Image (cartoon, rainbow, N blue to C red):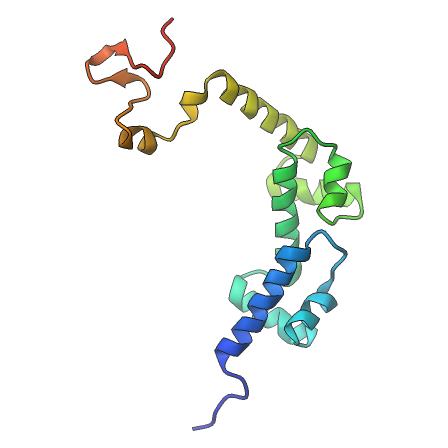
Length: 158
């Protein structure tokens, strides 16, 4: 039986090392060469191994990480252009187009949507408590144990 030149665990560790490199340096100007070098693979071999391990090419994963980080930043009152550059994009138009392609809405619309959600939570925070958590604590969102006529302590009485 012929032994493989590198055990699969060793290869996997190198792929994970490259993924962690992306996770830590997504905001910098990194490209496939930088990422493949981090894993000590040729570009083409690295792309195949990365996609096999994560279901995405390194570039797709980098884009995913950047968009996810942008979504986090867009929940704050911050300019779209600042978010664009903070997550590693060099062009506002490419960021906006890619963001819309991935999320279905523009970054500005996403900010507006998040602000509306934030205001709704401020108005009625208890409606955003997950039902399973309320059940576990003995709370019921709409009714207490006496019946549907009486509202629980966690709902405003009109």
